[in-house]
Length: 123
Length: 468
Image: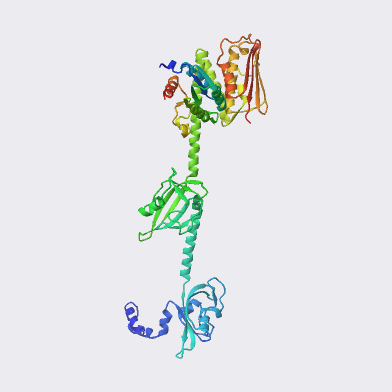
């Protein structure tokens, strides 16, 4: 599967509180062929978006302006939606419960994101 | 009767054998040379005989017939006056029974005091009638003084141990607790019973990973068993109230002058503050790393957006970078807690001629913004200014921008109005600036942006919630 078709037709939820960084994620996901990218800036918005439509894949920033994205991760896990974390902390910044999840370290590139999402979708 | 034994001493005495013969035949001269004071009293307590040493101790040769003692004054060991009728001699003459090792203080006429130890025996005649008493007393002043000095030394040692801020305790060779100071009690959270607890006084000890430390594996037990000083290993004292104190033990075995193990002293260093400082440092580094990585991702995004919207205009990218840098400066000045919106408003025109040239009116009160709102608003206002400079009111000589705001307890209301510029048409494609206004204000800050492309110029209003 080529990178540009990796996410073809998929509805993707991005949970990222910083607007400028969310543009970058949006661009990267579009470049990978995403069908739809929805952006949530906080936990409440993210949960509401999941309620209105179940995403096929999600990209979660761990630190949302002081809050943690774990409630969203828990919800996605319960719904069987694959997701990856993005963070500036690296793996050590994750709570032990989520250590096994795929992490993409900031700043990220298209190949890095493609690699992580491909690995996650294959699981 | 003294003769046979004393013959031995002849060899050492620097006197002629004949002279010695005379001396030893005189009992009083022998008695005078004893290192103890001896005196006798008759049945009524009248002094009838004393040796030279007794006179030395009393500091005088008293008249015979003074009652019970030749001392001018006498005292109990406590310092209370001791009347002659209550002396050991008086007691023996009253009871007919010997008195052993009775301590008293006697005073010489010159005021010097001696501590003496008296042994008084009754004297009986052939019919068994009490006829008097003999007191044999020795000067123990120096002995008592040294004992007091040793006692004082021990107390000083103990006071030093109490004053040391490190926790210290001692055990005997079996590990039984002999002493502990206040700092040790502080670490343990309990005052253990001396002589009962073994190895240490703590309620419970764990390894740093939470496993219990078996009693005979604690550091002082190892030090006593292996007869060597140790440093560590680190452990955690669990207090009865559940609080935990990480500490580093420093047990050292103690040997007597013959090299026999007689006990051990253990010093515990409280590591709580050290651990807290290390944790704080780690959290600071984590936070720094997070901010740096997020800033790098922001710059990466700014570069990508500039590349896309402005065909990679290098100057455009630099101005965006400088806008980010200026708001970082503002936040750094306030320890990254807040920044003043007024300063941010002025700074947004810094790359476009500033605010002092009559082209721009900026008015509003000081408003403290948290770091997140400050960052987002700085980038938004910069994009509005950038757009005005390229397509709007600041792109022609007659255009004017009015930036005003007011703060209410729950929200900041910002008004951006452009006038006098070229006629505005709805842009064909939404650029980075327009998209940023929407997403930063609505998504990131949970506010309400309205961006109008009026024919007279861009008008943008923003309502930004202010967290309480």
